[in-house]
Length: 217
Image (cartoon, rainbow, N blue to C red; front, side, top):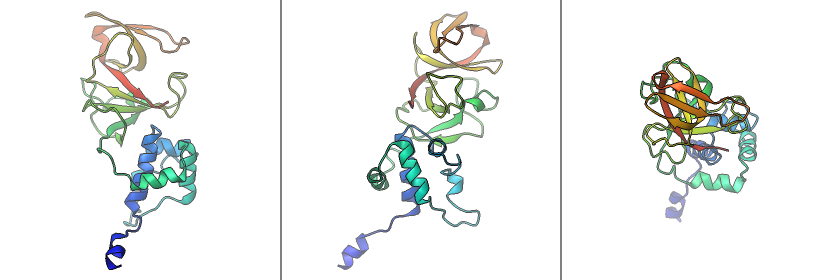
């Protein structure tokens, strides 16, 4: 009986928050993306909100968990299972909003994430160690990508004709297109939405191009 009692453990603060993180991951969202989809303040599930300034643990409310489950299309049984699940292989990638990514200071000259302001999110298919994620804000890229969607971008994955790509120009413009043709002198891009225009860029005007390898839809 003593051994049995010692083997039983109460739920911990880290287990509950870890389950919420994995719930967001299963839905292809960041914790803030899950909170927004659930109709909560975007910072509700942020790591900075999990401990008070004086060091006390802050637990998610039952209401916020219920709303998160509804937003993710999951049940309480799933959440209980997630509490018991491990963190997996622990892979995570840098995450920033698409709107922010157009500003300077977030990428080096090769298109790799750099500088401050990045969050972290656990996502699948992160085989390239330089992979990063962009969270779409607004509906400028709809219907291909909508507000709150996350796209996984891999600078180390070869880009082929027809691939959806993120391109950044040396002037600072960031765009999502499909690769139509690439030569030593020109980069031709097709719009992923018929309402948008195709683009043709001089190769010397392109800072970097990277393939989109996954998207939450």
